[in-house]
Amino acid sequence: MSARVDVPVDAHRAAMRPLVPPTWLGTLPFLLLLVAWWLLPRVVQYPSYMLPPISAVLDFAWESIRDGTLARNVVASLARLATGFVIGMALAIPLGLAIALNRFVADMFRPVLSFLQAIAGIAWVPLTIIWFGIGNGSVIFVIANTIFFASLYNTVIGVQSIPTSLYRAVRSHGGSGIALLTNLILPGALVQLLLGVRTSMAYGWRALVASEMIAGSSGLGYMTMEAVQWQRTDVIILGMIVIGLIWVVMDRTLFTVIERRTVGRWGLLQR
Amino acid sequence: MSGTLTLPAPAPHRVFGRRAARALRGAAGVLLLLVGWQISVPLVGMSSYFYPAPSDVVASFTDLVRKGILPVYFADSMERYFAGLIAGALLGVVFGVLIGLHRTVAVTLSPLLKFLFAIVEVAWIPIFVVWFGYGWKTIFLALIYVVFFPVLYNTLLGVRTAPQILVNALRSLGASRWQVLCYAILPSALPGIITGLRVGAGFAFRGLVFAEMVAAKTGIGYLIFEGTQTQQTARTIVGMVVMGLTWLAIDLCYLRPLERATIERWGLTVDAEQRT
Image 1 (cartoon, chains in turn yellow, red):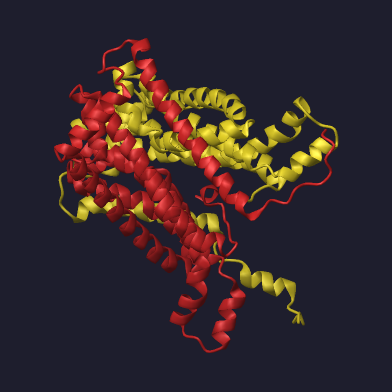
Image 2 (image 1 turned 90 degrees about the horizontal axis):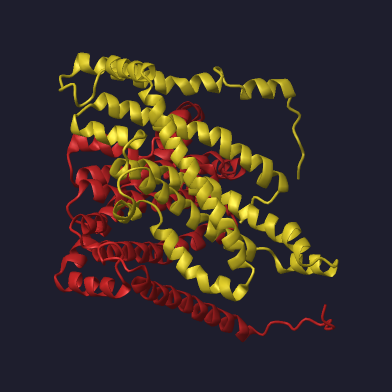
């Protein structure tokens, strides 16, 4: 069947190699976009508040970097995200394990958890405004809430999806109690939890930006939404770019690394 | 531990029994939550504006239904949601196939697409508001945006990873380009399309609620937001409950069966969320 035709390896490689390195190619659309943005006001007439010229956005970026407002907003947003994440995880993992270790209780809580996960996030903002007022409290609550229910649900699912044969294997080797917990249940739940981290962070990030827009008093979301009132599109566009850049960086550094270090290494990337 | 060596083989009827038991326990959990909530209200001792009881919520629900507000809001939300979802998915599939068929184009465009997806739809809402005002256009565009990218990206990936053997086989049997597309490339891209749709559908639902809070005068998101503004917190909770149940229903009735019919059946479980 596999009668292979001998292709000289080098020739094959040469044919496969693209003319331009892919990283260079990837910057091309960005450049085109910038050129189009630069050309647009010179070709079409439109009020400049609709789409400010690049120079206006750059000026504002420079200005807000120099006087530190941009850094302050970025730090405020990231600090809230981190706080919410830590609170959510710290509550969810022990509670999730406690729920999941008893099959009866786990079955009991699953519908409630999936319901609460379905409404987790931005829908709580009006309530949190009543409870905590505008500002940090509301935003952190919404993020912690998003992360908490996603992680709780994932922990419960994670423990429940550990194959029974593994339980039996540990048991038959005489493991029980703490040994069972540290050797099987924790790692087993961790897989599902880490698989879910990126998704729950994606929801958490959206919830952060959205809740800052409605209930924030600082941060990137607040900055962009506040600018609508004054029709400062240069502020809005800078905010959008920064929001995009931060997510790209987080995705590249945090989640990809976490995934490779843990789940990928254990060879458990399957559902 | 115990002395038994033989494991009883599960009888076929026990599967159903276990499911029923599960459902029963789940219902007990829901009941427990509601009862606990109702009992906690006098203990907390706050006004119903601050902490409404389930009975207030039920009263508010019947009130909203009787006045015809809730059905209208619900219909508006669903119309927006599915319009955005379908439009975004169609655009995503079309562009995904077009881009995916050309290697160079795919390589060139994917960083930009990734970056655009990283600018979450929530962040676009302010500028959409400046461009299109408060209203359906803003909501519709935000929903299209959030569905478009996951579908596009996963379609692209699916098209790019279509088995070359199949394409070659069809070509050598004299298939036209169109036939190759329909019989080899699209079917192998389908699991990717579905996973993209699933990811996008989840983000879009939350996006819908947020967009309605900011930019609409009807809909479930508006109900949630407006309830507390008018000191009718029970209405906010009605909105949240409707939102949660709606999402669970969409997940159960549309997304899960779709996934089962395509991805799971072909044994091609790809972890979608990890790819976006």
